[in-house]
Length: 208
Image 1 (tube, rainbow, N blue to C red):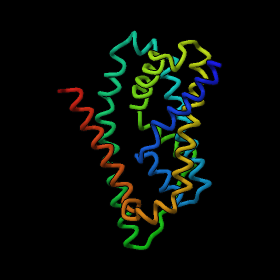
Image 2 (image 1 turned 180 degrees about the vertical axis):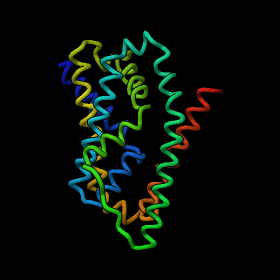
Image 3 (image 1 turned 90 degrees about the horizontal axis):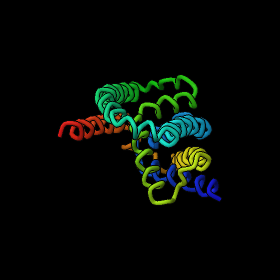
């Protein structure tokens, strides 16, 4: 029973950490609009696979994180320059996409959608301390057992929950694109802005 509960709690965690329209969700929408839903679902699978891997680190190696308190602050410190670089990259991509639209040039979609999804999700390294905090709360309040097997089954539950949310965004991509066309056309600027805000937020937290 603990295993089933852990899987369902993981499912809820996956939905909780991905339901809000963020950079990953909007990339799913952009992929679906650009190259179709099937590739968007593969892209979503890549995103969810990395979220599962990040959850593995956060949950199964929780003792390592708690016994080495310098790990999480180090991750956050390295996240600042990484987020700034990514903000510049996506802003540059936004200007390229705008220039291509004006010139009526369709840029080819390069690379497999699954691997692109994995790469995009890997950039969001702050998922590890975030899921670690959520799992810690769930274990402290008795919603998730501290035993190995329940924690193990919590991982695929989280990945599946995240994938289902991303798939929902992919299925709704036509509606989102129709009703939020200004937003979807400028998605790279939006993602670049999010990375910049994340960098600022981390810097304020680190140095306040």
